[in-house]
Image (cartoon, rainbow, N blue to C red; front, side):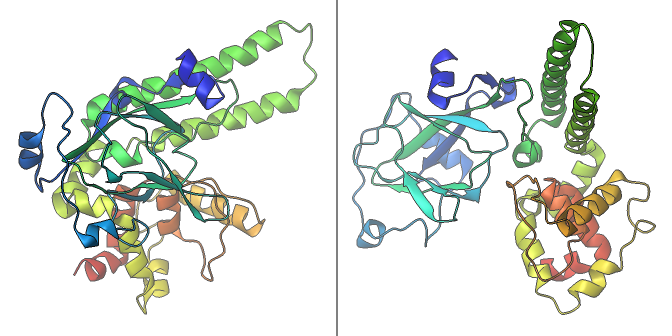
Length: 332
């Protein structure tokens, strides 16, 4: 941990056991069974001849192995488990502050790279010229009292063992909160008096918001199962694409406005969250989201669909989109 923390420039802590050794595998196989059958104990060194089309491969214009995305956690360490000699592609591309893609060369066999993947949008380029590309990823957060933790479980919730994931997620978040409380408590105990009451008030508000983000990520099991059974995991993964298609429909605004708190999830705090985000947008503030920070510049009102995706709740979003009547149209 010391070496990783020094490389990252901040003290790091492993998020939770589930996120130790998350492994990405690319082989020539098109199914899980084919991919498993192609794996060997030792890294493969066989080169694969490249076609002219493959030599001209541009991940920014063609398909990538993992498209543009944000990771679920602030920091990741990616360790390469394959021989990279002769490998074309396989790099990570990140978007800089002005949105321009920049290539980050991948590590060679046995080496790793640390990326602030929860804060920087990035993609993984498809690799060619070799029989396999295997990398393992462990996720971290900053072990600093008061540091904002952008962690979420949106990316892994729909395919993980949810009871285990939810247990570890809740423990991770509550333990971090406990450390935050202990840190402030020790500071207050060391002082004979307390003058900065506003700091305590800000601390309380931060912890309330932190707990809300923690609980909102725990989409009830029955709701998850209902969405997966009805729409499949692909719909959850492609929720933003479905939303983009819905926005193009002529009656989009009318259908979105037709769903009110009395029609869908009455009494849910999500409606309050929506109003708060709308107020922040009107005030010109930068908004936190599951996909980084943003300012709303669209020429339409920010609506519940945007709020649910902002919070990283595609499963709940699909339920709401279904209530608007738009889901049936974009899925047809």
